[in-house]
Image (cartoon, rainbow, N blue to C red; front, side):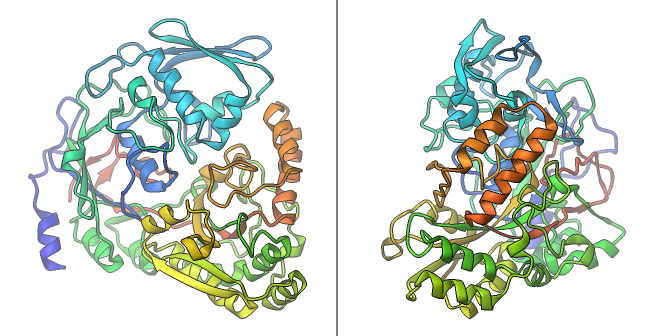
Length: 528
């Protein structure tokens, strides 16, 4: 602990309180993420740490503000035809990639096409697209072949695979393979050769970045960089993270470790955030539908009954105001599509009912592999309760306890469990990923192959398609409720409960955008 603290404390003296983009502060801001940064391409993975990485080095055409609205970011403007089938987009002038090349419409079209082959919402947008045409250096056109009511929401979404822009030469990479270079146009630069996995990732101010003129607002507005360097520092031990934050040796925790939230709230030098529903979290259970025993609906329903949200939420150990005792609204309680559709059988989940369903299913004790991310402060306590309840229900459970990065890799394997496959994976999703049915992990990837588990409910597909074409808000809510009923009735996924684990940062940081994960533009240190 002492040796690590001394290493972290080493740095350049903090400059005076005032700072501007022309004279950024020299002392780095040090951030500890919840999980280790492993994958650098945000189109290849939907890991939260890679999304945060993406917002540091890449930029988006459109961005969400803190009220959930969508604003131009790299774009100067957009306009739609009267029938909303032709959309014209114009880039801001003077945008550059980190290698000095200009950002062009060709780059953006190539980036959208790559993203649209990987992301659930992007796939649906591309399926409704007749053409993406380059007009000139700064203008391109998206022409739809049929109505699609979420063009701006898709291009501006902060969920799952975010549509970050990359140079066309990198966007030509197959979307299942990581790009060979990290060249963005965002507010920070990243040099792979300086990256020390397991220690730190270093970001430097992009001196050629041209922020928008309006103030920062959520993920939108002017991304003014006020520090020369940001470090993502690896500190896997929770007590060490908290000690380092209290001592001022690090500045920002993506998630405050659960057992220390109350203590951090009492410290006047620490800010503990309270995110709105979009930035809150939902515990989830990915289910592998391609292999026994969960190719059987009754077995999946037995798993639903093993998921007692009240017990799981209590196991998190968070203060009562940070959890919901019961929330089976798959699009987030408090979100725009909050609904109680399909919830009735889940309100009184019980191990006894799970046993009955396993008997009805003819479950014969097939080996069930659960991938347990022991290094995640959020997943670990929920998974421990789920493991206990599944075993009590009668599942022959084989728990593979490992780190989240290993879990993320293994869940791509859809072979039988005897050949390295899996059955169940406890995960955590954010409200950004769940609030819109066209981005939601339990609906957007229906009958596709891009999401682990490869669930498929043929009756869900036409509901999603009607939702995608719908422009009336009331009818959208009705269709979202229909989707939720199908997800629950077919037990496509499990939902362990809604909660929030706050970020925590030193009060000496000014300008923090509290959006649920760290973004470090506009942030400066005003004292220690």
